[in-house]
Length: 111
Length: 115
Image (cartoon, rainbow over all chains, first blue to last red; front, side, top):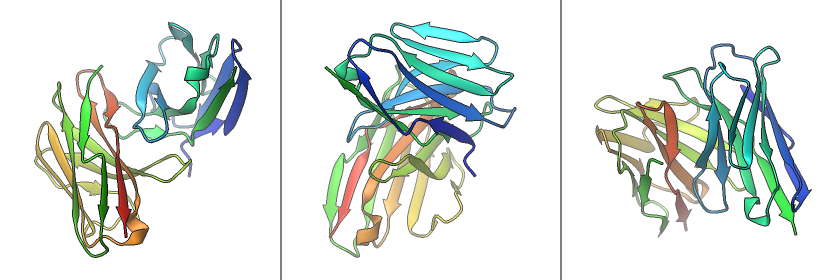
């Protein structure tokens, strides 16, 4: 059973556009929600993370929006660049336990 | 950010041999490390959770006698693929949890090819 559902599976965005990736969860015990970026042949790198006590967190061009009542969170990449082309994974965890990862979204930013 | 290293970054071995992969947290202590396997264009599949000083906890379907995990110190965990076969060829990634920040940091991965 997939604990975290991620969509879309793949995404193509024009340079300068906004990339949006969505995740949903059911387990209300989850209280930490990170996003990871993975380039081919590399390990995932932590991009940004949020806790449910805030509805939004922004770091540079990357923003997480969090809707606790809907049990959904999303990653927004503003002014998308070709260098952002990678696979993005959302994750969720109850503090102190294992992480549950989404299935990943392959983002392609075309010049 | 915290740094996790893996060694080797890639390995080619003959079928039947054993391969050891090291995972180190370089600038923080990790009481818990995780081992994942990733197939091309797929998500991370958790294989086992490794706690320092105790036996690893394996996920359902993962053979503990084939994938030996040792977490001898707060900065080092090893995964040994015993009697490797071609179907074990994959990308193996470790991660370490920084207890101060409650997040996981991933290593760069090890590409294993069994001939």
